[in-house]
Length: 278
Image 1 (cartoon, helix red, strand yellow):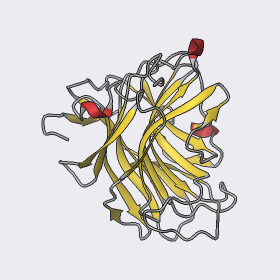
Image 2 (cartoon, rainbow, N blue to C red):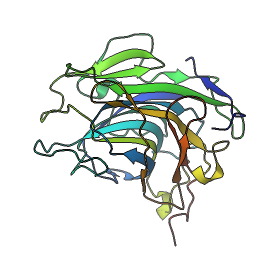
Image 3 (spheres, helix red, strand yellow):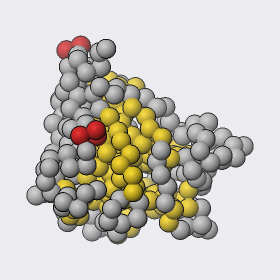
Image 4 (cartoon, rainbow, N blue to C red):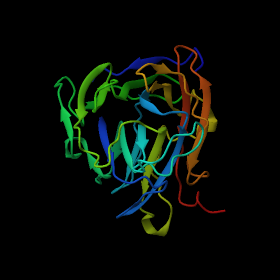
């Protein structure tokens, strides 16, 4: 990011969430609508997790919809699959994601302690924690939380951290076929589009600005870093992307972070009644 962008890690009304995602389809068809995605991802693993800074934005959300900014790891249920660097796995049925959520009265998948198998071990932060007085400003100061999902070599559980503190772990046995390594690390935004009135939603993603507007304006996942299968840091360029409605929301790899190791990914957009029409 340019040096004139101020960064602060939020100290404690946006909420930190753990998202349970039981399926690995690129586009999720929720009961009340369709999930729109603008995200970057990498398949240069196998990995033992990922870290990143998630931006905090006050996002406009239509009733019964949501807007999420997240970091996600995914693994396959195919136990015969042998990872090939740069190639998508056959599925990412097993997923764990953490990040910030703004919702208009609807929940996506399981949330927080509703996600079966998550054991909270640290009371410093509650899942669903709101971050007050920490709203990022377009062209101005940006606030972040730092998150991590990782495994310690030799241990079977996935751990979750927030602002450097481990807050809990996913119990062994939560994933029936075994989820021992991530083959897909993803970061960006998702919006639930219920097509209100038969038109595309006005719910914003990120800052409400397109990634192409640049890091001074767009929401940015900052200094993404993978965890390799030995438990060490791995510089990992997320060169792949998935964008379901590019005229509504987009994503852009901004390259190496200028202040610390890792990669920056911009994402977002304003939505709009007719943005999905050609």
